[in-house]
Length: 185
Image (cartoon, rainbow, N blue to C red; front, top):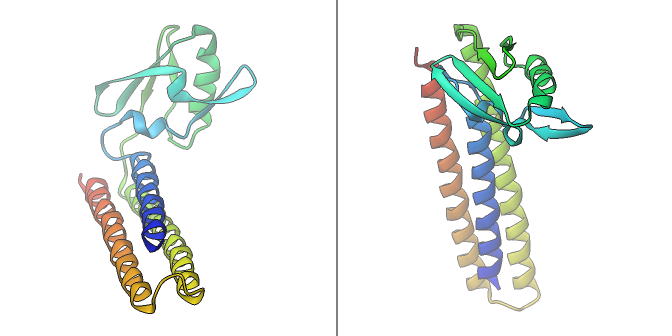
């Protein structure tokens, strides 16, 4: 029973780490990558659709991204969504592909991205603390109801704390790497 609570907590913490990785991928560093466009939604025939379902991406240069729509009829909607996104790039359309030249990252913009990365890492940690609290309550309830002994409950809590520490350190490591990527010129 304690193992079930721990297993559920581990799965949820793993998901929190995955969300943090996805969020970090969406933060631009010096080189443009398709992960930057994961949060861009295009109004495709009245439905908000992720850009990555509507187009392919190529990176001919470090700051240039070529977006090739699968459906040429969606070209203007994709261009509009890219223009309205907070990337700071002005898309140009040649009829076949949309070319995005991303602006050079300034020191000020890099600092903003580092702050954003810290915020996203903290959100992941808060999520993990919620998962920990929920699992601890489940273990405490098992002990209180007499379904497991107090020693097993204490051992389960220690395992839960170790699990929480391990996943929190994983997020911290991801943050350090992203911060190093962002500050590298």
